[in-house]
Length: 251
Length: 353
Image 1: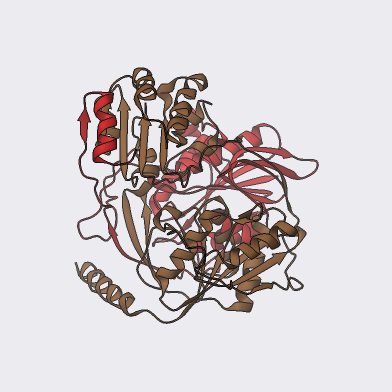
Image 2: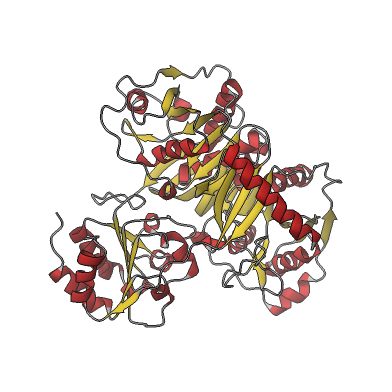
Protein backbone atom coordinates (compact mmCIF):
# COMPACT_ATOMS: atom_id res chain seq x y z
CA UNK A 1 0.00 0.00 0.00
CA UNK A 2 1.14 3.53 -0.72
CA UNK A 3 0.55 6.36 1.77
CA UNK A 4 0.23 9.94 0.64
CA UNK A 5 0.90 12.74 3.14
CA UNK A 6 0.13 16.41 2.50
CA UNK A 7 2.50 18.86 4.20
CA UNK A 8 2.38 22.65 4.46
CA UNK A 9 5.06 25.29 4.96
CA UNK A 10 3.95 27.74 7.65
CA UNK A 11 5.32 30.38 10.02
CA UNK A 12 7.05 28.49 12.85
CA UNK A 13 4.76 27.88 15.83
CA UNK A 14 7.05 29.71 18.26
CA UNK A 15 7.22 32.95 16.26
CA UNK A 16 5.36 35.95 17.64
CA UNK A 17 3.59 37.16 14.52
CA UNK A 18 3.04 40.78 13.58
CA UNK A 19 0.18 42.19 11.56
CA UNK A 20 1.37 44.37 8.67
CA UNK A 21 0.63 48.10 9.18
CA UNK A 22 -1.35 48.21 5.92
CA UNK A 23 -3.62 45.42 7.25
CA UNK A 24 -3.07 43.31 4.16
CA UNK A 25 -1.79 40.33 6.09
CA UNK A 26 0.72 38.98 8.57
CA UNK A 27 4.43 39.74 8.23
CA UNK A 28 6.17 36.64 6.80
CA UNK A 29 9.35 38.21 5.36
CA UNK A 30 12.49 37.22 7.30
CA UNK A 31 10.40 35.11 9.64
CA UNK A 32 11.27 31.51 10.51
CA UNK A 33 9.23 29.01 8.47
CA UNK A 34 8.73 25.33 9.29
CA UNK A 35 6.64 22.32 8.43
CA UNK A 36 3.22 22.68 10.06
CA UNK A 37 3.39 20.73 13.35
CA UNK A 38 0.26 18.69 12.52
CA UNK A 39 1.78 17.79 9.13
CA UNK A 40 4.93 16.54 10.90
CA UNK A 41 2.69 14.29 12.97
CA UNK A 42 0.94 13.10 9.79
CA UNK A 43 4.25 12.22 8.15
CA UNK A 44 5.52 10.50 11.30
CA UNK A 45 2.40 8.32 11.38
CA UNK A 46 2.90 7.32 7.74
CA UNK A 47 6.54 6.44 8.42
CA UNK A 48 5.58 4.33 11.44
CA UNK A 49 3.02 2.44 9.37
CA UNK A 50 5.64 1.79 6.70
CA UNK A 51 8.19 0.68 9.31
CA UNK A 52 5.62 -1.76 10.68
CA UNK A 53 5.57 -3.37 7.26
CA UNK A 54 2.03 -2.26 6.42
CA UNK A 55 2.94 0.11 3.60
CA UNK A 56 5.53 0.08 0.85
CA UNK A 57 5.97 3.75 0.10
CA UNK A 58 5.38 7.17 1.62
CA UNK A 59 4.87 10.08 -0.76
CA UNK A 60 4.94 13.65 0.59
CA UNK A 61 3.01 16.37 -1.25
CA UNK A 62 3.18 20.13 -0.91
CA UNK A 63 1.58 23.00 -2.81
CA UNK A 64 2.68 26.58 -3.29
CA UNK A 65 5.57 28.68 -4.56
CA UNK A 66 9.12 27.42 -5.06
CA UNK A 67 10.20 27.86 -1.42
CA UNK A 68 7.75 25.11 -0.39
CA UNK A 69 10.31 22.62 -1.62
CA UNK A 70 12.24 23.28 1.66
CA UNK A 71 9.39 21.64 3.54
CA UNK A 72 9.31 18.75 1.12
CA UNK A 73 13.05 18.19 1.64
CA UNK A 74 12.44 18.12 5.40
CA UNK A 75 9.79 15.46 4.81
CA UNK A 76 12.18 13.45 2.66
CA UNK A 77 14.83 13.82 5.36
CA UNK A 78 12.38 12.45 7.93
CA UNK A 79 11.97 9.40 5.71
CA UNK A 80 9.43 9.97 2.93
CA UNK A 81 10.43 8.12 -0.25
CA UNK A 82 9.31 10.64 -2.86
CA UNK A 83 8.07 14.19 -3.02
CA UNK A 84 5.48 15.95 -5.17
CA UNK A 85 5.38 19.72 -5.51
CA UNK A 86 2.38 21.40 -7.07
CA UNK A 87 3.71 24.78 -8.03
CA UNK A 88 1.27 27.64 -7.56
CA UNK A 89 2.08 31.31 -7.13
CA UNK A 90 -0.94 32.43 -5.18
CA UNK A 91 -2.49 31.40 -1.86
CA UNK A 92 -4.65 28.34 -2.43
CA UNK A 93 -7.93 27.98 -0.56
CA UNK A 94 -8.59 24.56 0.99
CA UNK A 95 -11.14 23.67 -1.69
CA UNK A 96 -8.53 24.13 -4.43
CA UNK A 97 -5.95 22.18 -2.42
CA UNK A 98 -8.51 19.38 -2.05
CA UNK A 99 -9.22 19.36 -5.80
CA UNK A 100 -5.51 19.22 -6.60
CA UNK A 101 -5.02 16.43 -4.06
CA UNK A 102 -7.89 14.51 -5.67
CA UNK A 103 -6.11 14.58 -9.02
CA UNK A 104 -2.87 13.40 -7.39
CA UNK A 105 -4.72 10.58 -5.63
CA UNK A 106 -6.11 9.51 -9.02
CA UNK A 107 -2.56 9.38 -10.38
CA UNK A 108 -0.86 7.76 -7.38
CA UNK A 109 -3.63 5.51 -5.97
CA UNK A 110 -2.66 5.55 -2.30
CA UNK A 111 -4.52 3.36 0.20
CA UNK A 112 -4.31 6.04 2.87
CA UNK A 113 -4.18 9.82 2.76
CA UNK A 114 -2.94 11.49 5.94
CA UNK A 115 -3.03 15.22 6.63
CA UNK A 116 -2.60 17.44 9.66
CA UNK A 117 -5.97 18.44 11.11
CA UNK A 118 -5.25 22.14 10.63
CA UNK A 119 -2.50 24.50 9.54
CA UNK A 120 -1.38 26.81 12.34
CA UNK A 121 -1.41 29.85 10.06
CA UNK A 122 -5.00 29.93 8.82
CA UNK A 123 -6.37 27.46 11.43
CA UNK A 124 -8.97 26.37 8.84
CA UNK A 125 -9.32 22.67 9.70
CA UNK A 126 -11.06 21.93 6.36
CA UNK A 127 -8.78 20.30 3.78
CA UNK A 128 -8.87 16.70 5.05
CA UNK A 129 -12.66 16.69 5.31
CA UNK A 130 -13.00 18.23 1.83
CA UNK A 131 -10.72 15.80 0.04
CA UNK A 132 -12.49 12.90 1.76
CA UNK A 133 -15.82 14.28 0.50
CA UNK A 134 -14.53 14.72 -3.06
CA UNK A 135 -13.11 11.18 -3.11
CA UNK A 136 -16.10 9.63 -1.38
CA UNK A 137 -13.68 8.11 1.15
CA UNK A 138 -14.47 7.70 4.86
CA UNK A 139 -12.74 10.21 7.16
CA UNK A 140 -11.13 9.89 10.60
CA UNK A 141 -10.45 13.45 11.71
CA UNK A 142 -8.61 14.67 14.85
CA UNK A 143 -7.01 11.21 15.20
CA UNK A 144 -5.13 10.41 18.39
CA UNK A 145 -4.60 6.74 17.56
CA UNK A 146 -4.61 4.75 14.32
CA UNK A 147 -4.48 0.97 14.09
CA UNK A 148 -4.43 -0.62 10.66
CA UNK A 149 -5.74 -4.08 9.85
CA UNK A 150 -4.13 -4.92 6.53
CA UNK A 151 -6.07 -8.14 6.02
CA UNK A 152 -9.47 -6.59 6.61
CA UNK A 153 -8.34 -3.39 4.84
CA UNK A 154 -9.63 -1.31 7.74
CA UNK A 155 -8.36 1.40 10.05
CA UNK A 156 -9.55 1.78 13.65
CA UNK A 157 -9.23 5.43 14.60
CA UNK A 158 -9.58 7.07 18.02
CA UNK A 159 -10.65 10.69 17.63
CA UNK A 160 -10.43 13.53 20.10
CA UNK A 161 -13.90 15.04 20.21
CA UNK A 162 -15.72 17.48 22.51
CA UNK A 163 -17.16 14.67 24.62
CA UNK A 164 -14.00 12.59 24.96
CA UNK A 165 -12.49 9.91 22.75
CA UNK A 166 -14.57 8.49 19.90
CA UNK A 167 -13.57 5.25 18.17
CA UNK A 168 -14.48 4.68 14.52
CA UNK A 169 -13.73 1.88 12.08
CA UNK A 170 -13.00 3.00 8.51
CA UNK A 171 -12.75 0.95 5.33
CA UNK A 172 -9.63 1.67 3.31
CA UNK A 173 -8.89 3.72 1.33
CA UNK A 174 -9.52 6.47 3.88
CA UNK A 175 -8.51 10.00 4.87
CA UNK A 176 -7.07 10.61 8.33
CA UNK A 177 -6.30 14.01 9.85
CA UNK A 178 -3.92 14.06 12.78
CA UNK A 179 -4.29 15.58 16.21
CA UNK A 180 -1.51 16.49 18.65
CA UNK A 181 -1.29 13.31 20.64
CA UNK A 182 -1.10 10.83 17.76
CA UNK A 183 2.68 10.58 17.94
CA UNK A 184 5.97 12.41 18.55
CA UNK A 185 7.56 13.30 15.19
CA UNK A 186 11.17 12.27 14.71
CA UNK A 187 13.98 14.74 14.01
CA UNK A 188 15.69 14.46 10.64
CA UNK A 189 19.23 13.25 11.29
CA UNK A 190 22.14 14.77 9.35
CA UNK A 191 22.83 11.60 7.28
CA UNK A 192 19.13 11.52 6.33
CA UNK A 193 19.18 15.19 5.39
CA UNK A 194 22.07 14.40 3.02
CA UNK A 195 20.28 11.34 1.61
CA UNK A 196 17.16 13.45 1.04
CA UNK A 197 18.95 15.60 -1.50
CA UNK A 198 18.89 12.77 -4.02
CA UNK A 199 15.31 11.64 -3.45
CA UNK A 200 13.06 12.56 -6.40
CA UNK A 201 10.60 15.46 -6.33
CA UNK A 202 8.07 15.57 -9.14
CA UNK A 203 6.65 18.93 -10.13
CA UNK A 204 3.15 19.59 -11.38
CA UNK A 205 1.24 22.73 -12.22
CA UNK A 206 -2.49 23.11 -11.58
CA UNK A 207 -3.00 23.36 -15.35
CA UNK A 208 -1.33 19.99 -15.88
CA UNK A 209 -3.69 18.55 -13.28
CA UNK A 210 -6.70 20.18 -14.96
CA UNK A 211 -7.67 22.17 -11.90
CA UNK A 212 -8.76 25.76 -12.21
CA UNK A 213 -7.48 28.03 -9.48
CA UNK A 214 -10.50 30.05 -8.66
CA UNK A 215 -11.33 31.54 -5.33
CA UNK A 216 -14.66 32.39 -3.79
CA UNK A 217 -13.02 34.03 -0.77
CA UNK A 218 -11.42 37.49 -0.61
CA UNK A 219 -9.33 38.78 2.28
CA UNK A 220 -10.70 42.20 3.14
CA UNK A 221 -8.25 42.98 5.93
CA UNK A 222 -6.13 41.43 8.66
CA UNK A 223 -6.15 43.20 12.02
CA UNK A 224 -4.87 42.75 15.54
CA UNK A 225 -7.30 41.43 18.10
CA UNK A 226 -8.45 43.84 20.83
CA UNK A 227 -5.83 44.08 23.57
CA UNK A 228 -6.77 43.28 27.11
CA UNK A 229 -6.35 46.02 29.73
CA UNK A 230 -3.24 45.46 31.83
CA UNK A 231 -3.89 43.56 35.06
CA UNK A 232 -2.49 43.83 38.58
CA UNK A 233 -0.30 41.57 40.66
CA UNK A 234 -1.88 41.00 44.06
CA UNK A 235 -0.13 40.15 47.28
CA UNK A 236 -2.38 37.63 49.01
CA UNK A 237 -5.20 35.18 48.60
CA UNK A 238 -7.36 37.43 50.80
CA UNK A 239 -6.81 40.27 48.37
CA UNK A 240 -7.68 38.04 45.43
CA UNK A 241 -10.94 36.87 46.94
CA UNK A 242 -11.83 40.44 47.83
CA UNK A 243 -11.15 41.71 44.29
CA UNK A 244 -13.14 38.89 42.72
CA UNK A 245 -16.08 39.65 44.99
CA UNK A 246 -16.16 43.44 45.23
CA UNK A 247 -14.42 44.60 42.06
CA UNK A 248 -15.02 41.96 39.42
CA UNK A 249 -18.28 40.66 40.90
CA UNK A 250 -17.70 37.16 39.61
CA UNK A 251 -18.04 35.29 42.88
CA UNK B 1 2.22 50.44 -3.90
CA UNK B 2 -0.68 50.40 -6.34
CA UNK B 3 -1.94 47.08 -5.02
CA UNK B 4 -2.01 48.45 -1.48
CA UNK B 5 -4.22 51.36 -2.58
CA UNK B 6 -6.46 48.96 -4.48
CA UNK B 7 -6.84 46.81 -1.39
CA UNK B 8 -7.74 49.84 0.74
CA UNK B 9 -10.40 51.01 -1.74
CA UNK B 10 -11.76 47.50 -2.17
CA UNK B 11 -12.14 47.03 1.56
CA UNK B 12 -13.88 50.40 1.97
CA UNK B 13 -16.34 49.45 -0.75
CA UNK B 14 -16.93 46.05 0.73
CA UNK B 15 -17.54 47.41 4.19
CA UNK B 16 -20.09 49.83 2.68
CA UNK B 17 -21.74 47.06 0.68
CA UNK B 18 -22.22 44.82 3.67
CA UNK B 19 -24.03 47.62 5.51
CA UNK B 20 -26.68 47.59 2.77
CA UNK B 21 -26.81 43.83 2.33
CA UNK B 22 -30.08 43.08 4.06
CA UNK B 23 -31.70 41.10 1.30
CA UNK B 24 -33.72 38.16 2.51
CA UNK B 25 -31.82 35.07 3.47
CA UNK B 26 -32.78 31.50 4.26
CA UNK B 27 -30.54 29.60 6.61
CA UNK B 28 -30.15 25.93 7.32
CA UNK B 29 -28.81 25.25 10.81
CA UNK B 30 -27.19 21.86 11.41
CA UNK B 31 -28.22 20.99 14.94
CA UNK B 32 -27.09 18.43 17.46
CA UNK B 33 -29.33 16.70 19.93
CA UNK B 34 -28.85 14.33 22.82
CA UNK B 35 -31.31 12.49 25.00
CA UNK B 36 -34.27 14.18 23.36
CA UNK B 37 -32.97 17.74 23.79
CA UNK B 38 -31.26 20.19 21.48
CA UNK B 39 -27.66 20.82 22.51
CA UNK B 40 -27.22 24.36 23.82
CA UNK B 41 -24.41 25.21 21.43
CA UNK B 42 -26.61 24.55 18.40
CA UNK B 43 -28.66 27.57 19.44
CA UNK B 44 -25.60 29.78 18.90
CA UNK B 45 -25.89 28.93 15.22
CA UNK B 46 -29.45 30.29 15.29
CA UNK B 47 -28.24 33.49 16.99
CA UNK B 48 -25.55 33.79 14.30
CA UNK B 49 -28.22 33.37 11.60
CA UNK B 50 -29.95 36.46 13.00
CA UNK B 51 -26.79 38.50 12.42
CA UNK B 52 -26.72 37.55 8.76
CA UNK B 53 -29.88 39.30 7.82
CA UNK B 54 -32.93 40.83 9.47
CA UNK B 55 -35.08 38.94 7.03
CA UNK B 56 -33.87 35.39 7.49
CA UNK B 57 -35.95 32.25 7.67
CA UNK B 58 -34.13 29.68 9.80
CA UNK B 59 -34.66 25.95 9.33
CA UNK B 60 -33.17 23.56 11.85
CA UNK B 61 -31.97 20.17 10.55
CA UNK B 62 -31.84 17.22 12.91
CA UNK B 63 -30.80 13.67 12.11
CA UNK B 64 -30.92 10.48 14.08
CA UNK B 65 -33.35 7.66 14.63
CA UNK B 66 -36.17 6.70 16.91
CA UNK B 67 -38.13 8.38 19.67
CA UNK B 68 -35.32 10.55 21.06
CA UNK B 69 -35.00 12.16 17.64
CA UNK B 70 -38.71 12.91 17.39
CA UNK B 71 -38.67 14.29 20.93
CA UNK B 72 -35.71 16.52 20.06
CA UNK B 73 -37.63 17.72 17.02
CA UNK B 74 -40.55 18.82 19.21
CA UNK B 75 -38.11 20.70 21.45
CA UNK B 76 -36.42 22.23 18.41
CA UNK B 77 -39.76 23.61 17.25
CA UNK B 78 -39.94 25.88 20.30
CA UNK B 79 -36.26 26.30 21.18
CA UNK B 80 -35.88 29.77 19.68
CA UNK B 81 -38.33 32.30 18.20
CA UNK B 82 -36.25 32.59 15.01
CA UNK B 83 -36.65 28.93 14.06
CA UNK B 84 -39.40 28.80 11.43
CA UNK B 85 -39.07 25.16 10.40
CA UNK B 86 -37.67 21.90 11.75
CA UNK B 87 -36.45 19.24 9.32
CA UNK B 88 -36.02 15.71 10.60
CA UNK B 89 -33.95 12.98 8.92
CA UNK B 90 -34.93 9.71 10.58
CA UNK B 91 -32.84 6.70 9.63
CA UNK B 92 -30.48 4.11 11.12
CA UNK B 93 -27.76 5.70 9.01
CA UNK B 94 -27.86 8.68 11.38
CA UNK B 95 -27.80 6.76 14.63
CA UNK B 96 -24.38 8.33 15.24
CA UNK B 97 -23.35 11.71 13.78
CA UNK B 98 -20.90 10.37 11.19
CA UNK B 99 -19.55 12.80 8.60
CA UNK B 100 -20.22 10.64 5.53
CA UNK B 101 -24.02 10.30 5.79
CA UNK B 102 -24.40 13.81 7.27
CA UNK B 103 -22.55 15.46 4.37
CA UNK B 104 -24.80 13.65 1.88
CA UNK B 105 -27.83 14.71 3.90
CA UNK B 106 -26.79 18.37 3.84
CA UNK B 107 -26.20 18.11 0.08
CA UNK B 108 -29.67 16.61 -0.39
CA UNK B 109 -31.46 19.14 1.82
CA UNK B 110 -29.58 22.05 0.23
CA UNK B 111 -30.43 20.89 -3.29
CA UNK B 112 -34.10 20.68 -2.34
CA UNK B 113 -34.25 23.81 -0.19
CA UNK B 114 -31.86 26.20 -1.95
CA UNK B 115 -30.73 27.95 1.25
CA UNK B 116 -28.56 31.04 1.03
CA UNK B 117 -26.63 30.03 4.15
CA UNK B 118 -25.76 26.82 6.01
CA UNK B 119 -24.46 27.19 9.58
CA UNK B 120 -23.14 24.84 12.24
CA UNK B 121 -21.44 25.57 15.54
CA UNK B 122 -17.66 25.19 15.50
CA UNK B 123 -17.44 22.12 17.77
CA UNK B 124 -16.23 18.66 16.79
CA UNK B 125 -19.58 17.92 15.05
CA UNK B 126 -19.60 21.05 12.86
CA UNK B 127 -15.87 20.99 12.19
CA UNK B 128 -16.03 17.36 11.10
CA UNK B 129 -19.09 17.60 8.87
CA UNK B 130 -19.48 21.07 7.37
CA UNK B 131 -16.28 21.18 5.25
CA UNK B 132 -17.08 17.76 3.78
CA UNK B 133 -20.57 18.98 2.86
CA UNK B 134 -19.08 22.19 1.41
CA UNK B 135 -16.81 20.16 -0.87
CA UNK B 136 -19.82 18.18 -2.13
CA UNK B 137 -21.58 21.47 -2.88
CA UNK B 138 -18.39 22.89 -4.44
CA UNK B 139 -18.18 25.97 -2.21
CA UNK B 140 -15.48 27.30 0.14
CA UNK B 141 -16.75 27.36 3.71
CA UNK B 142 -15.68 29.96 6.29
CA UNK B 143 -14.87 28.23 9.55
CA UNK B 144 -14.59 29.38 13.16
CA UNK B 145 -16.36 32.72 12.58
CA UNK B 146 -16.35 35.13 15.54
CA UNK B 147 -18.12 38.07 13.96
CA UNK B 148 -20.63 38.52 11.15
CA UNK B 149 -20.57 41.82 9.22
CA UNK B 150 -23.48 41.22 6.88
CA UNK B 151 -24.60 38.39 4.65
CA UNK B 152 -21.20 37.61 3.14
CA UNK B 153 -18.53 39.18 5.29
CA UNK B 154 -17.07 37.44 8.31
CA UNK B 155 -14.25 37.76 10.80
CA UNK B 156 -12.28 34.73 11.87
CA UNK B 157 -9.15 34.25 14.00
CA UNK B 158 -5.88 33.15 12.39
CA UNK B 159 -2.43 32.39 13.83
CA UNK B 160 -3.90 31.04 17.08
CA UNK B 161 -6.04 34.17 17.45
CA UNK B 162 -3.07 36.55 17.26
CA UNK B 163 -4.64 38.12 14.21
CA UNK B 164 -8.18 38.52 12.95
CA UNK B 165 -8.98 38.00 9.28
CA UNK B 166 -11.99 39.66 7.65
CA UNK B 167 -13.05 37.63 4.63
CA UNK B 168 -15.70 38.21 2.05
CA UNK B 169 -17.49 35.28 0.43
CA UNK B 170 -17.93 35.90 -3.28
CA UNK B 171 -19.17 32.51 -4.43
CA UNK B 172 -22.59 31.12 -5.16
CA UNK B 173 -25.15 29.86 -2.64
CA UNK B 174 -24.95 28.40 -0.14
CA UNK B 175 -22.56 30.42 1.97
CA UNK B 176 -21.42 27.85 4.56
CA UNK B 177 -20.12 28.73 8.02
CA UNK B 178 -19.10 27.28 11.32
CA UNK B 179 -19.40 29.79 14.16
CA UNK B 180 -17.79 29.89 17.60
CA UNK B 181 -20.52 29.47 20.19
CA UNK B 182 -18.63 31.76 22.60
CA UNK B 183 -19.02 34.60 20.08
CA UNK B 184 -22.77 34.13 19.65
CA UNK B 185 -24.15 33.71 23.16
CA UNK B 186 -27.78 32.67 23.45
CA UNK B 187 -29.92 35.10 25.46
CA UNK B 188 -32.35 33.52 27.93
CA UNK B 189 -35.59 32.79 26.11
CA UNK B 190 -38.90 33.28 27.89
CA UNK B 191 -41.05 30.17 28.06
CA UNK B 192 -43.94 31.61 26.08
CA UNK B 193 -41.82 33.40 23.46
CA UNK B 194 -43.15 31.07 20.81
CA UNK B 195 -46.32 29.32 21.82
CA UNK B 196 -47.12 27.44 18.63
CA UNK B 197 -43.75 26.12 17.63
CA UNK B 198 -42.34 25.72 14.14
CA UNK B 199 -43.76 23.08 11.80
CA UNK B 200 -41.84 19.81 11.77
CA UNK B 201 -41.36 17.91 8.52
CA UNK B 202 -39.63 14.64 7.76
CA UNK B 203 -36.89 14.76 5.13
CA UNK B 204 -37.53 12.40 2.21
CA UNK B 205 -34.43 10.22 2.25
CA UNK B 206 -35.43 8.04 -0.69
CA UNK B 207 -33.03 9.84 -3.01
CA UNK B 208 -30.14 10.02 -0.51
CA UNK B 209 -26.95 9.12 -2.34
CA UNK B 210 -25.62 5.96 -0.67
CA UNK B 211 -22.07 6.28 -2.02
CA UNK B 212 -19.53 6.54 0.85
CA UNK B 213 -22.16 5.71 3.49
CA UNK B 214 -21.40 2.48 5.31
CA UNK B 215 -17.65 2.80 4.90
CA UNK B 216 -17.34 4.17 8.43
CA UNK B 217 -18.73 2.61 11.58
CA UNK B 218 -19.12 4.06 15.07
CA UNK B 219 -17.59 1.81 17.73
CA UNK B 220 -17.75 3.73 21.02
CA UNK B 221 -17.26 6.98 22.91
CA UNK B 222 -15.04 7.02 26.01
CA UNK B 223 -15.88 9.96 28.19
CA UNK B 224 -15.65 11.02 31.79
CA UNK B 225 -18.93 10.91 33.60
CA UNK B 226 -19.12 14.14 35.50
CA UNK B 227 -21.66 16.27 37.33
CA UNK B 228 -19.66 19.38 36.59
CA UNK B 229 -20.84 22.02 34.13
CA UNK B 230 -19.88 21.71 30.47
CA UNK B 231 -16.45 23.29 29.85
CA UNK B 232 -17.57 25.08 26.69
CA UNK B 233 -20.40 26.96 28.39
CA UNK B 234 -19.50 27.14 32.11
CA UNK B 235 -19.62 30.48 33.89
CA UNK B 236 -16.39 29.72 35.75
CA UNK B 237 -13.46 27.59 34.59
CA UNK B 238 -10.57 26.42 36.78
CA UNK B 239 -7.57 25.23 34.78
CA UNK B 240 -4.44 23.39 35.83
CA UNK B 241 -1.14 23.12 34.02
CA UNK B 242 1.84 20.82 34.13
CA UNK B 243 2.94 22.33 37.46
CA UNK B 244 0.31 20.20 39.17
CA UNK B 245 2.83 17.38 38.63
CA UNK B 246 0.41 14.45 38.86
CA UNK B 247 -3.13 13.25 38.26
CA UNK B 248 -3.46 12.90 42.02
CA UNK B 249 -2.53 16.54 42.56
CA UNK B 250 -4.95 17.58 39.84
CA UNK B 251 -7.72 16.58 42.24
CA UNK B 252 -7.01 19.88 44.01
CA UNK B 253 -8.15 21.68 40.86
CA UNK B 254 -11.27 19.54 40.83
CA UNK B 255 -11.99 20.36 44.49
CA UNK B 256 -11.66 24.07 43.78
CA UNK B 257 -13.93 23.73 40.76
CA UNK B 258 -16.45 21.88 42.92
CA UNK B 259 -16.39 24.71 45.46
CA UNK B 260 -16.97 27.32 42.78
CA UNK B 261 -19.48 25.31 40.76
CA UNK B 262 -16.98 25.54 37.93
CA UNK B 263 -15.84 23.41 35.01
CA UNK B 264 -12.32 21.98 34.97
CA UNK B 265 -9.90 22.84 32.19
CA UNK B 266 -6.35 21.80 31.42
CA UNK B 267 -3.39 22.80 29.29
CA UNK B 268 -2.02 20.60 26.53
CA UNK B 269 0.96 19.75 28.75
CA UNK B 270 -1.30 18.46 31.51
CA UNK B 271 -3.25 16.28 29.06
CA UNK B 272 -0.08 15.01 27.37
CA UNK B 273 1.27 14.07 30.82
CA UNK B 274 -1.86 12.04 31.44
CA UNK B 275 -3.21 14.08 34.38
CA UNK B 276 -6.62 14.52 32.74
CA UNK B 277 -8.46 13.31 29.62
CA UNK B 278 -8.25 15.20 26.31
CA UNK B 279 -11.71 16.75 26.45
CA UNK B 280 -10.52 19.14 29.17
CA UNK B 281 -7.87 20.74 26.96
CA UNK B 282 -8.30 24.46 26.44
CA UNK B 283 -6.39 26.03 23.57
CA UNK B 284 -5.88 26.66 19.86
CA UNK B 285 -6.64 23.07 18.98
CA UNK B 286 -8.71 22.17 22.04
CA UNK B 287 -11.75 23.92 23.42
CA UNK B 288 -12.31 27.64 23.09
CA UNK B 289 -13.85 29.08 26.25
CA UNK B 290 -14.97 32.56 27.29
CA UNK B 291 -16.31 32.25 30.84
CA UNK B 292 -17.01 35.06 33.30
CA UNK B 293 -14.05 33.87 35.36
CA UNK B 294 -11.03 31.86 34.22
CA UNK B 295 -8.56 30.78 36.89
CA UNK B 296 -5.25 29.35 35.72
CA UNK B 297 -3.02 27.52 38.16
CA UNK B 298 0.53 26.58 37.19
CA UNK B 299 -0.12 27.62 33.60
CA UNK B 300 2.76 29.38 31.86
CA UNK B 301 0.60 31.01 29.20
CA UNK B 302 1.87 29.64 25.89
CA UNK B 303 0.42 31.33 22.78
CA UNK B 304 -1.54 28.20 21.93
CA UNK B 305 -3.20 28.06 25.36
CA UNK B 306 -4.05 31.77 25.36
CA UNK B 307 -5.81 31.24 22.03
CA UNK B 308 -8.39 29.17 23.87
CA UNK B 309 -9.16 31.48 26.81
CA UNK B 310 -8.14 35.08 26.20
CA UNK B 311 -11.72 36.19 25.61
CA UNK B 312 -12.66 35.30 29.21
CA UNK B 313 -14.17 38.27 31.07
CA UNK B 314 -11.91 38.01 34.14
CA UNK B 315 -8.63 36.08 34.14
CA UNK B 316 -6.81 35.08 37.31
CA UNK B 317 -3.33 33.55 37.17
CA UNK B 318 -1.35 31.85 39.91
CA UNK B 319 2.23 30.91 39.07
CA UNK B 320 5.57 30.71 40.91
CA UNK B 321 7.30 32.39 37.98
CA UNK B 322 6.75 36.15 37.94
CA UNK B 323 7.82 36.26 34.28
CA UNK B 324 5.29 33.70 33.06
CA UNK B 325 3.51 35.08 29.96
CA UNK B 326 0.13 34.29 31.53
CA UNK B 327 0.50 37.39 33.71
CA UNK B 328 0.31 39.53 30.57
CA UNK B 329 -3.30 38.55 30.01
CA UNK B 330 -4.34 38.13 33.66
CA UNK B 331 -6.52 40.77 35.29
CA UNK B 332 -5.42 39.54 38.70
CA UNK B 333 -2.16 37.73 39.23
CA UNK B 334 -0.67 36.04 42.24
CA UNK B 335 2.99 35.08 42.18
CA UNK B 336 3.06 32.11 44.48
CA UNK B 337 3.02 28.37 44.94
CA UNK B 338 -0.27 26.87 43.80
CA UNK B 339 0.17 24.09 46.37
CA UNK B 340 -0.24 26.77 49.02
CA UNK B 341 -2.67 29.06 47.24
CA UNK B 342 -5.28 26.46 46.33
CA UNK B 343 -5.71 25.08 49.89
CA UNK B 344 -5.97 28.66 51.15
CA UNK B 345 -8.62 29.44 48.54
CA UNK B 346 -10.52 26.29 49.47
CA UNK B 347 -10.51 27.41 53.06
CA UNK B 348 -11.46 31.03 52.50
CA UNK B 349 -13.83 31.01 49.51
CA UNK B 350 -17.49 31.38 50.29
CA UNK B 351 -19.69 28.34 49.61
CA UNK B 352 -21.29 28.54 46.18
CA UNK B 353 -24.87 29.79 46.25
